[in-house]
Amino acid sequence: MVHLQDNDYIVETIDMTNDALYALKESTGITAELASCHTAEIGGYIIEGHVPADVIEELLVERPDIVGLALPGMPPGSPGMGGVSEKPLEILAFDQQGQVWVYTNW
Image (cartoon, rainbow, N blue to C red):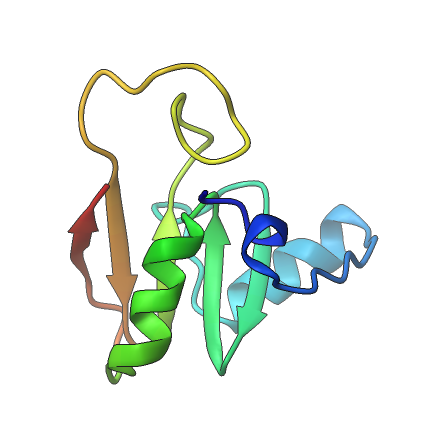
């Protein structure tokens, strides 16, 4: 299972205007390169997009010195999107200096 709710996470949805959402993304280091449809905070990390729950769980165990993880866009085969990915999905990490790199493939 890869959905947050399927892994006993309590998900609180906050409805906000596009302007407020863009401001939140900007304030947390989410650039256009990283952007997706969902932005979340869990365990002190920012999670952008459809990052699988098992990858988030790994992040929370490893506790790397990063701001968060992102799965840009809304790729087929990612949790909640349906479809099948034609290649492994690249989950990106990003830090406070704006550096971005592949954290893992899923």
